[in-house]
Length: 153
Image (tube, rainbow, N blue to C red; front, side, top):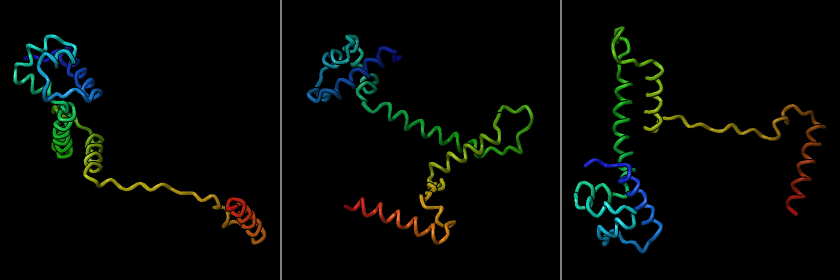
């Protein structure tokens, strides 16, 4: 059976309504109730097909499809990384550039946990202290002490 746009919309509508209404129990619903909640009368007939029913009643279908896509993406990244660019001949169909390979490597390293930790550079408000003479330093310290005393009251 070919899934139509209307089937996909009905499934989306059904699961949104089920999530918003905890009184709806999908385990005990009849095909007629499912069709009514989804707003598509045709579902009464097509829910008898096991393949359609399995698809329609899978609330995590999108998550499952994304997870399956992750496997394909990883395979494709590995394929790109392992291409020996030196062996490619002019006119071959694999139009991979070195930048593509480098980017694929970066992505794989990032998701494998090898991305370098990026520390934020913390600049101190008093970075000028090192350039102050003794008199300027005394003035700076006294100003800071006054502001601390005011804040602690």
